Length: 519
Image (cartoon, rainbow, N blue to C red; front, side, top):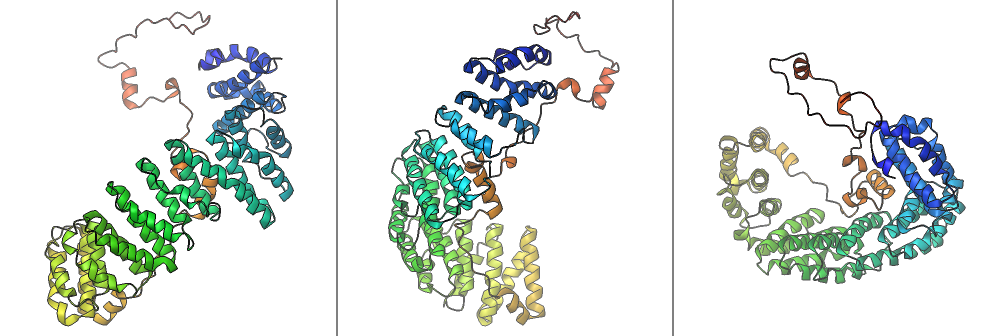
């Protein structure tokens, strides 16, 4: 163990013979310790490990009678495979069953290692998949959350290979209680579980459909747990529980933390987009929140209602009057842009829409690009719908956009609208007032290919970040300094510069191990 931790080339050759003996020692403690030493040696000298046959010895240890030796051998082979960039052995049915046979007697972290390795095996037929699931299912009751999630990963992946709806429902029913139990653990475990549950619910939407109450936020939950619970609640909402979920969201919107409140309001809007039958109830809750006159609640509600209008055109127009009563409170760019979009979209139905637009134009120069772009489009819509009331206003806004704004996007859009309106107003109507596609439910927002990769890497950092491993892990072999080529400046200095570098201090190399060359 000590020699393996000394990552020096000169140690490697001295380590080979003791390591070979230790890998075949009669004591399982010695064998399991030696197994972990092999990948350490591989990092220093890959060729030496392969020439000495240590990888083949590790593969032989997969059939060892001691479970700890088996789990350490699996971990060592996995580490070497990662370093090589390719598998060190073939994971077939025989190897998978050997690993699963050692599962019951392993330590909890040994079980995680075995489960993660078995998850890479794809059974040849449905009966084999069922056999593996039955062997793994008892691990769902384990006290260690890592074991539970690793077992969940295997079962979820193998469900696609199992035939028979009743069997699949039975396995899903067995998965739900362990995942619910994770919600009573420490906050950090809850967070990891929630990130994984979001993936599981997208793959198997019916998995936790009856357990929505478990994900209601508690007063002492940290903010990062509350935010993830909101996403899970939206995913689990359906026509049977939407009233409960809306009551919770309504209560959360009265909390103190403005970030949590804003996301709660957004969650109401997501439910409205997801469930058409519940949209009216969602809008009613949003209107009640607007009436509270709390600034950031009102502004977030306006943003959400814009999305509802985009999903359900020409519905819920009775809300517009309530929105217009809160124009003075708008200081957030997104909320202001949303309100401008609503006024422009329904300009022909809002009696005082020209006056409202003039109010927004007053602060055009001070607004950000997001608001300016939205105001440009909204004023053009107003002109096309009510030309008699907005001809002067559209000239004024186009003039401001093309002459007094530095942002090239705003300026270019101003010129485009100007040319459209001056050359062919009818064609401008076809462009600006064309029907837009309605927005879609974003509950299943992870694309299929990415989701497959994340399920493959369930219970790892990848499933927590919701990113592929290669996006945040760059595993590179360390290059020794003496192997680096010299650049031009280094070559000049090495060739004898004007000022020679001082000699290095005479430090004795304690790792020379008999090297007779003087320091």
